[in-house]
Image (tube, rainbow, N blue to C red):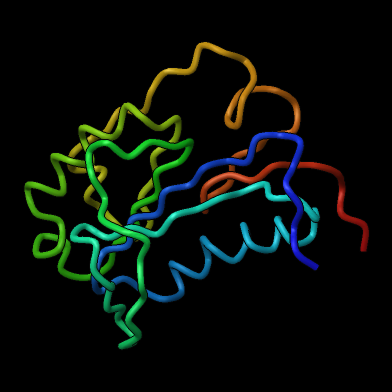
Length: 157
């Protein structure tokens, strides 16, 4: 079963994966969104995988992950997630940090996963004035540790 286009706007997620990240960190972010799309039968989440240089990312397990392109200061979306791991100072240089800081205003939510980089250099997400939209305070939205999810209806076991 493939998700159909939702009548509601899908959340646009930008995931920046740094080299020497854990495959578990990446999977724990992607798989809940994939599952939500599948279970709902709608496209609730759209995501793009990016890297600082646009090239494949070598993870700590030795697997190389293809990405959709290079992260730039012009990126926009609802949620910006940066997945880090070992040797952040080597993989997140000044140019990348400057791009993160410049792009921060284009996102409503910014989060780091296994990354102290965001704590060391605070990024400021855009301010929302509307009550509706992908990350509005409208009923049906909730936050969780791996980003956010849409609380559509109770799950019955």
